[in-house]
Length: 511
Image 1: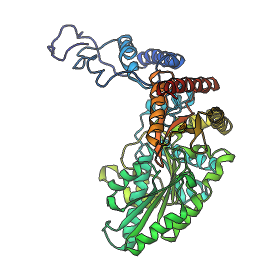
Image 2 (image 1 turned 180 degrees about the vertical axis):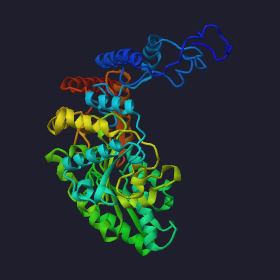
Image 3 (image 1 turned 30 degrees about the vertical axis):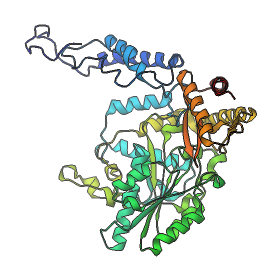
Image 4 (image 1 turned 135 degrees about the horizontal axis):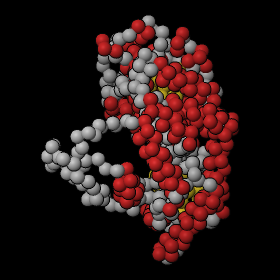
């Protein structure tokens, strides 16, 4: 690479060269090269260590301290990606990635992303790109039908043009979905109370709710002391208890506080616990709370009839979100949010500067998605989902989910068949939570140490990657099946690796 310290009359720059950052034929050539590079990466992804082996700040020492003054050929850039970037990647798309939750991908979604980038539509309002807005409305209704959501969450049964009634919007992440609904709930409640004082507003969730809920609550102005994290236990498989929720809410009301918002989860991050929506929403409805369902992971499975019961009671809630990038093959980032009353989002989030005014928006006959989200600009993300749904159909997507669940069930069977291990919580979807047993040693710290060593051993091999959690004071290992490229053979090999690790760890510990 060159240095920025170059004379601007440098003769190496041809006076006849014309800078064309987007020449169609040059794009065609380089894009073909890039597709080949990407396809090769996918083809040999198993050859890379799943968990990166680099140390902090490794990349700074390998790259120049300034950008190149003169252009560099694409092949040189490819070389640097292979030599310097790929070694620093933890390969989420590896078939041996079993940590956290998967980030699923597909050919159809990649092509949709190419189209999204191709058009580069900044669809902040309807007029800025009508197709971007209207395709998103169509796709959100398609998904709502797949989930068998009530008609009150769909554009197709709402007000003219979908304005003011129910409907869906693609957010970037669950964090934003929770934040915008929380702000809408806050403003609705303050208007009803005739005050701007948020000090008495209280929000509720279980201690298994994603940590983003606490962050969103603080950003929305909720006092940290009014963010209730209600304990769960193994007795309820770490789901929130309706009876306990009611006791906590009643105590707050007696203290003069105002219940505002309840966040429920279908598939918690630690163990995929499922909060019972219907009885919990009944409690919240008694106190006029906004009820949001975070179904980021588990919600996708509900397109399969055998999992749909986890959404029973959804007709009682105000909003629901799920993340297709976790299980519906759509690439990052993509979070689908449905609300019953979009006017509440618009009232809380709308802006109307003169430079964005236009006749369709002023007529209230169209949806302007800028008023359904935190920012203004937005990408044409619905293309990804549209291509996934059209290219594969509901049947194949259901089959994909069932395949992951089947492989997780197989892993669960392996764990149960080995007397050294135990399944800690019942498996609901495609996550297995397990650990090495205590072997007669009562001290929790000893058992935790065994499992930490096992996790370190497995991950250090580079042949698989798992993560852990602590729930109810119990340290456990998480094995999440779901990477698009994962097949049965990868799960079988990972289990053999886990058993080898257990042999090594127990031998060192003298068990």
